[in-house]
Length: 376
Image (tube, rainbow, N blue to C red):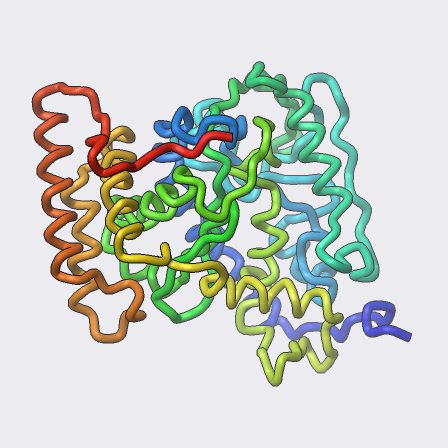
């Protein structure tokens, strides 16, 4: 009999509280990052061309997004059940403007009922990362808001049903996942940008977070290691409905789990291999992909990212200061340290963008830099 068929060992009250605290912390981090990056993704959707989504600006969760071993005890503590509920709302998003909040239960989208996801007693549905329910709700939202048309969303709060009208925003089809590790690393693979918790904590402001993400977004726009997609509403969040499929296992488990010789132990019982893969994948996610392979490409990404930031109304000088600070830190991964020549080039593009903005000139990169937008 597989471990996924056995009833999970009960958690102690302390373990449940640790899980809840860890989840709350991770949701706060993810909400801040998603809210910070949203203006950059929206302002530069035209540069991403066909690789865009129509985003509502929220993420949702059901009890089955929690690891099998914890869902029965931790789900109620988090007030997460079988009906999908909003786990966070991005600042400035259509969902935020409509007044949606964390904990709102999703009932209908354009008169199509959002069915509940019955509590699963095994982890079989998560084998190989397959989540039929997430695919179902993601597609339902996509169909409801096809081509950016408005969505009539019915929800319940405090036992009272209500309805809001949402106008999805087109954004670059990129999602940002905070990987819960201590390394100061940043990387991307296809349409996902992995930001380590260490680098998240190193950033002193939202502007610095935006600069880090904009650098990787520049790589995405230039077509390095990306895949093409069509515009859809991807599960309500920026760029995709998979974030919780990767992040929630780390967020919810917190100190309950310990990674020992590649095997996770919960309350004395080993987790099934799939959950191990999901968590290990997120922990090591910041090492996936490459950090823009050559110094020439780095400078092009720096150059384009300054324009991406300016187009989003970000203070470019404050934002790009993160590279100067990173270069002075001895414990930062070597690949994140900018050379003196690169820092000089960053100063120049900051001056260039600032001058154009002050003169109300179009924020168009200098063609001599040969920073081209990838076309599908």
